[in-house]
Amino acid sequence: MKQIVIQSPLQQKKTENLKFIPTHLQWRYLTFVLLVGDLLLLGLAFRLAYFIRFETGLTIFQEEAFDSEPFYQRLVMVLIPLWLVILGLGGAYDRKKLLVGTQEYSTIFNSAALGTLLIIAFSFIYPDFILSRGWLFIAWGLVFFLPAAGRFLLRRFVYLLRREGYFVSNAIIVGANNEGISLASQFKHRVSSGLVIRGFIDKKIPVGKFVHEDLKILGDLDQIDDVIEQYKIEEIILASSAISTRDKVMEIFQKYGVASNVNVRLSSGLYEIITTGLSVQEIGSVPMFSINQVRLTGIDVFLKAMLDYCITIPGLLAISPFFLFLLVAIKLDSPGPAIHRRRVMGVNGEQFDAFKFRTMYVNGDEILAQHPELKAELEQNHKLKNDPRITRIGHFLRKTSLDELPQLLNVLKRDMSLVGPRIIAPDEMKKYSKWDINLLTVHPGITGLWQVSGRSDLSYKERVNLDMYYIRNWSIWLDLQILFQTIPVVLKGTGAY
Image 1 (cartoon, helix red, strand yellow):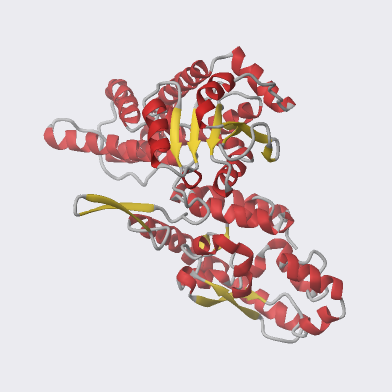
Image 2: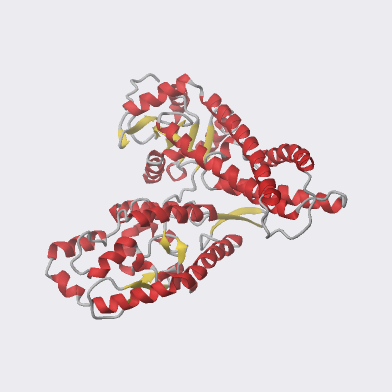
């Protein structure tokens, strides 16, 4: 199949860069950099642990410990290779597990915990092996934190390189139906995915027809070999709802599923609906899929709750005087209650009252009725940039996000979480359309991806997409990352009104 290839300037630049350094060599270089970086950071972690334990003179360490520096130097010479092996076995250098965001932190944390447990077990087996418990505790934290920080910085650097065409893979999507286009949109607008979508394979649409932005039909299933060769495809993504026959799916998997240079991925067929995850259970020796009713289960629920309580309880105690000051200021500024209750949607569709400091006049509806153009804008976006209903202190509270402080009480009640999707009113559910089933699988949050990605400057569709991305990709590390990013966003007041 010979045809003229029309590429955008960005695609041409990416192709040129990929030709300059073959993709497999790029990943080898990255793995080498990771290995050397981990080696250096592990050495720094163990040395820093020794410095903190034995050279700072901190009085928090009470036990007498053997502090021979040569002993710890010899020990570290054994521990560093051991740690690298544990990281390798855990998948820390596996291409499929690299640059996958917060999942890398989980791999490093598990490796740090396993390595520490092995040292403790060895000390029980050989009683003559004596070392400082304080040193071991500090080292455990540092061998997680420093390599994790190194991965964070390297990942940001690689994301920049991906904009120039490095560390990306050419991909095609088999199926140009709604699911296939949804997948293309998700990958195309997220540089972090590492996929350059070249186009679609579909037998029902003429070759060359553009079906999504600058993406077109490259061929049908009978021409897939030529397309793979011509576009140097490394990833085949099957939109399963677009393939009518099981035989075609099996044919693709049999041909490319075991190929070393092409990776085949199959979507669930319910891309727009499922974000809670699937579980597999054998019933009568037949593997059956079921959809999880909630996004978080088991240890994930416990970790998220502990994160919420460990921050919320001390936080409320610390700000309680300021909290009372704001209550008085609101009452003095305008008549009405200081706390506003808003009926919103919670997990599994259960409604609850979300607390906020009142930022509007109590006769806000009457004020808005005098501005029909603003009323129409509110119905469309559920936000107003210049809202005449807001009080004087309300402008300050919204700009600094202090109006949301009472929602910490909702977190204690487990109606909300510190991090999650936006809270929405029941009448907003129709805005989420086919996504609404996902929205109700997790607790809404005081902050979230929407908060650190532009806040009210985002369109409603962008906010919905960010909520869905958060639900689909949740991890405790993602929550920590969002909480960390929220601080500078709130201090700058970006996108708040």
